[in-house]
Image 1 (cartoon, rainbow over the protein chains, first blue to last red):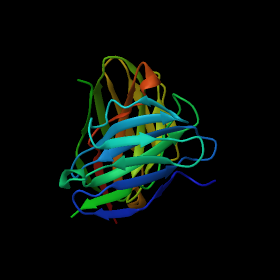
Image 2 (image 1 turned 90 degrees about the vertical axis):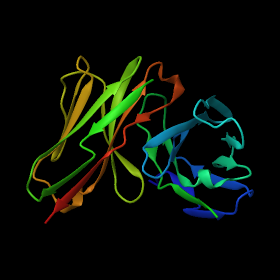
Image 3 (image 1 turned 90 degrees about the horizontal axis):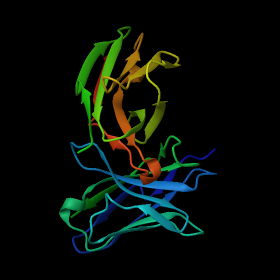
Image 4 (image 1 turned 30 degrees about the vertical axis):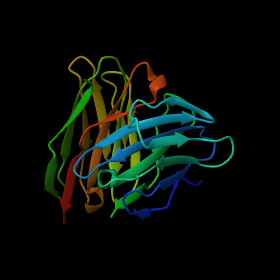
Length: 113
Length: 113
C-alpha cells in the first residue's frame, strides 16, 4: 500500500516565481489536508479539500496561495510570486473519511532564494 | 484561541529508561486527540484518543486522555535508540467538518545507547 506521495521532495524557487506542490493521497482516501511547518514552529493547518471541493481554507493566506483537488489527478498547492517567508516544509495528509486519523506524506521542502 | 502545549520540549534519556510526554490543550470544543512520531520525514500516526480514561497501547507505547483536566500523556517503556524522534500531539476541534488538526510544538526525544 503506497502512502501519501508528495513531489517534489525539494523545490527551489527565486523570489517572484511560482511554486507548485503535488500530493497524491493514499489509495481509498478522498480527503486531503495541507499543513505548513516553518522553522522552529509546529505544523499549521492550511486547507482541507475533498474531490473538487474546498471544505475549509481558514488557514490559507488570503493572497498568492491556492489549492485544488481535481476529479482526476493529485491535489495541488500553488504559491504565486513567492517570497522568502514562504520557505518552509509543506506537508500533505489524507484520510478515508472525516474524523479518521490523517496520514502524512514526507513533505516538500520549499526554499526561496 | 485554541492551542496545544507539549512538555518537555526536549528530553534526553538512556536506553531502557521509561519516558512520559505531556500534552495539554485548550479548545472551544473537543473531538479527539492524536499522537504522531516524526523522524526525518512524515509524521507517523500512533494513537487517536476520544474518551477519557481508556488507555491505548501499542507495544511499548501507551497513551491516555483526561478530558476533565484537558491533557494526555504518552508513555514509552524500555526505550530504544529507534525511539529517538519528535513526538507531536494534535487536537481535532469539533465540529470536525473543518478538517483542522491543531498541533503542539512537539517533544524532541533523544535516546542514548
